[in-house]
Length: 232
Ligand code: SF4
Image 1: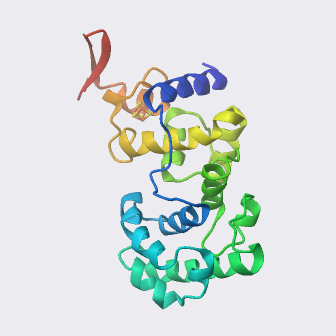
Image 2 (image 1 turned 135 degrees about the vertical axis):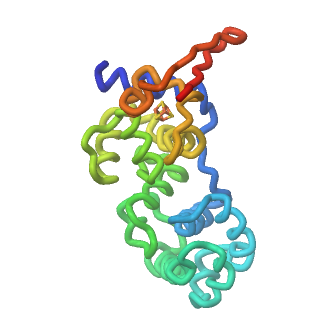
Image 3 (image 1 turned 45 degrees about the vertical axis):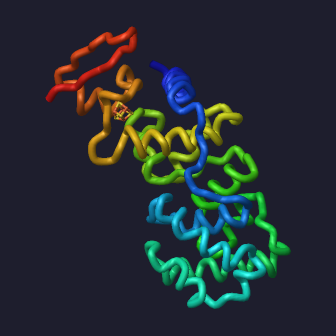
């Protein structure tokens, strides 16, 4: 199978199983997404979505958050991971938005990366979700799932995964592909125990071939739907 066929079959499968592919972070504006993305580092989207409504009610825009001290912000985000650092990031990010960008979230990843608390991955998430830029944010799910399926080879860093993925994914599908890989990693191809019996990529997935093919497969046809049951 060529690499292009591998990408093409993976994309077709994801289009079928994840017709709606969007971020699970709740937001109503670019500023709100930026805040949520900073908070989401090493934290679940579910937790972030609990934290952001009261935080953003108190500090609804860059101007109001820029006036706050990190300690004021900390009070609203203390149930998050690394609240001390993130309070400083949110304060610094808001102040720079006001001083350097007129209070508006920039659309270019390179500009977003100047903001405190915003690395390459976070910048790409905001640029892709808000501004539909064809950039791939590589988080732990994207990294793991792309390797398992065999979409990337010998990619040791998130940057090399990003480069290999964007080389093969059609530019108009990069935005969705990011969410597809995250959804697949979150709900099916989970880190500890991938649920291969519910995955339609077993025919060509590298990980499945290497680690699961010795297990006995039983194929059942129920109401014309092919279900693969894995027995150890
Ligand atoms: S077959 Fe298994 S390892 Fe491969 S992508 Fe699907 S869930 Fe992940």
